[in-house]
Length: 376
Image (cartoon, rainbow, N blue to C red; front, side, top):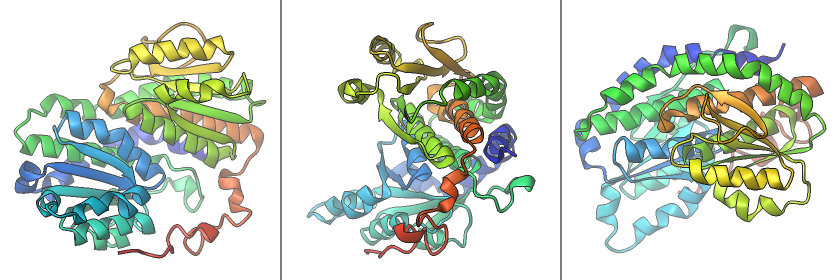
């Protein structure tokens, strides 16, 4: 059984099931006074939760008109909060808020970021799987994203797909709530979000077979690069993580512009390089960089909206067209399917079967994700 693929196939129904409920919960938790008065938002997390923050930053800024910074929990908790200690910054802290994203609710660094922000007067929220998780208890308020396990995958450790999509959807719901309370017309945006389940289904129909074929053609590869900008940068980071988790292969997520300054000089010429584009703000630069990738013999796989490829060269995986701000919900699907098929074809266990000290017990084994020392 390809449990990862089964998770991916369940995403359209999951989006259909949770979107309306998440919109309602965001409306209940984010009170009107807060929404109108907040002047700056920080969204923090680790791993997939950080990638969800990166992927939704544009939604908070363009839909709600709220300056937003997506940061890793470590960068925020140990470095980002210190400017609130400076003289004259107390007023800024009172007008700022932090959303800590943690599916398990037990990741030490994200809890630490919430606690350190709260101690400095920021309003704090947790996006997590339950109201009793440690991060929910640490924050001023909680937005719950609990989704049930698939019946045939209960107890199986699978790279996160459903939890990531749930986090994205809740963050979009928060952006829409903030926009509405700040007097913005959100009807078109809400309608688009409520239709993302249909678009996820269309994306699976288009990309499932091509993703498997691509996995078969690239079995010789030992490393992968995923590129994107704006919300697609979060998608690129997430997709690289799914390859790492599913098959253990080296994979990195990179900004499109930064690829031209860095990976352009990599020694291996035939590295499979995924170029994820929304074909909107990023289109002109992505097209130039794709030309460069092809010129130096990279195996380019473009992931773009159906019918909107940057060029005919290279391989293509399509996703259903949608507003750029919501594209992370569907643009990740083709690459996830690729990762699921690669692990299956190689016979690799997910997460390397947690060998070599990679325990899921006792807070993440030697990495101590959940038992790290807490600095407050």
